Amino acid sequence: MFIWDFTADLVLGQIIDWLYQQLIAFLGDFFSMMGNMGADMFHMAWVQAIVRFFSYLGWALYGTGLLVAMFEYAIEAQSGRASVRDTALNAIKGFMAVSLFTIVPVELYKLSITLQGTFTSGISNLMGSSGTLKEKSLEALANVGRVGLSPLIGIFCILLMGYAVIKVFFANLKRGGILLIQIAVGSLYMFSVPRGYMDGFVSWSKQVVGLCLTAFLQATILIAGLLVFNQNLLLGLGLMLASSEIPRIAGQFGLDTSTKANFMSTVYAAQSAVNITRTIVKGVAK
Image (cartoon, rainbow, N blue to C red):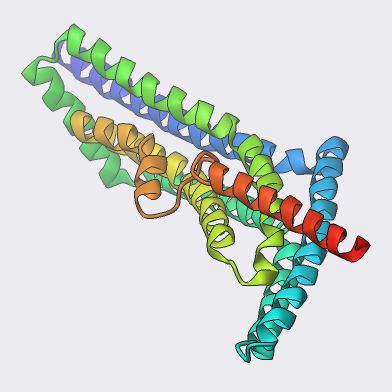
């Protein structure tokens, strides 16, 4: 009877460990697939048409901003404060920005998703190939059984795990759409860049970097939490819940992943472009 109990416990522990490993591998591949789905969205014809439209809008605003910058240079030259070097540098910066603002965000997002898939696959394979990790996992489960884990605590832990996974799931689901919105909003800053006003565009660039960083870190920290959960329940839950806080933490360091922060500045930039263009047209007509 003792031999049967020992054998059953050993076999059951190995089955549970194998199932847990497969769950981690599945979640890593699933989040990588969702990220690739957001990146593949930019290969669709209608998305490419939208991106092309905002690319043309960005070029139009860049040309208008360049024309306004030349007028501002002529006005400042009358008082001796004009700088050919600064005006030329701003024009070059604007040309590079308008040429790349529809390309770099998508490629950077694809790179972050590829790195996330490779990294999570590597750490899940490390769990499967590490015999020491398996021994520690089974020992932790045995200790939990000896202490006596309450069914209520087990249900609570499973609910928290599901909450973290679902929150990361919905964050990945909408990330491709957020990137498309950021590209659309970025076109409105092309009027300000050739005139030397770079603050709005720099803030927009931080948003794109924050989005790509979040796409890489959220799934990675979630998988790491699942790995630790098998050995330490509370620490694993803490890591999984921390994965949903990554956008907020990135926002504290200027890498806000939402489009709300720059909405008012974007509207102001668009209104300035319209008003200045209207003034120039009236002046030329007179």
